[in-house]
Length: 112
Length: 114
Image (spheres, one colour):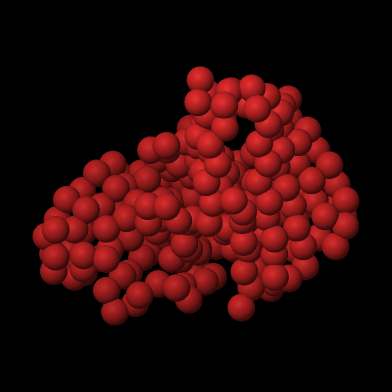
């Protein structure tokens, strides 16, 4: 069945270093969404990418959607302790665009 | 704008007992989701409502889990009887019927089954 995979599962960085998480889908996606979940918190919507090759930026966060619309990445420049959390990508199921398939997430730890 | 409300925030029960969770979505959000999130994993969809109708409940263990969304607003999720493996965070989310369909999550209910 449809799957969304994320790597790495965990990442430890020193504050100020860059961070990237990658998301790969087994099928072509109509869009991909990214969420952030702080420790003990709930997922919070960050962004949606729709177009092939799309790149969007939110301050230090850069999101990309692959040309084939099967992969995506989130890059954080100069990480801060406030970036700590788990980053999830999620794509819609074929036939039900309101139902999301979630990756397992990448947990980011930032050492001050 | 008020967010998604959930209660209780924490619940501890013994196995074979029953438990119910309540969710009030963001006003105007037609779609409501219940997720189960086990520590270290992504959210797993249990059931999706569109107004008061069920759109998807393919991963809901129907022998012990039930959910309803009366009048297309509030929703309750029930587990009866609970098993040890039901220990998880139960998240409720809602979304609009247009746009990006981004989902807004409530704070969740952390269930511990002993």
